[in-house]
Image 1 (cartoon, rainbow, N blue to C red):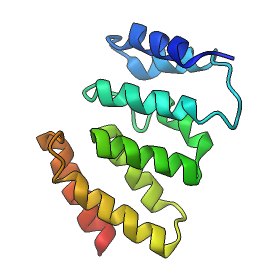
Image 2: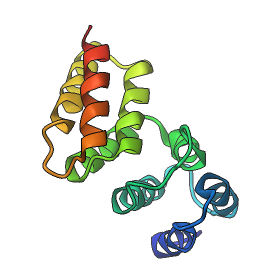
Image 3: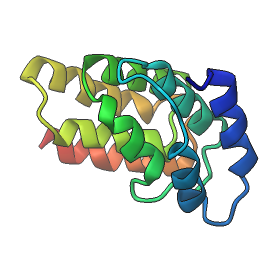
Image 4: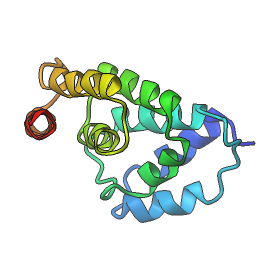
Length: 140
């Protein structure tokens, strides 16, 4: 099984690739992990926080990869990441969760989370505009 440090080192090595989505697709094909290993989700989210301006794709290989862990723990880790440092990619990921099947109480909390992103002190202008737009869409 790959360690968290190994995964982070591999991602850092490709962070400046012109086609990051393709490069990350090649990297994750070689990752050895357990289906219950949420550390891989946390690793990817921390990487996205440190590199908010990478073009990850729409949604890209990394998002497709960690979405296989979708469930309450995935959502918890995503919200924690958004609370630390929201990015365009993680804001879109929250929107993908909202567009999925989410219970009404959980949905309300996630809509509130989307609204909170716009006021986050580390959110840049692009993240704020996206969060406001997605909040308005999800609230109507």
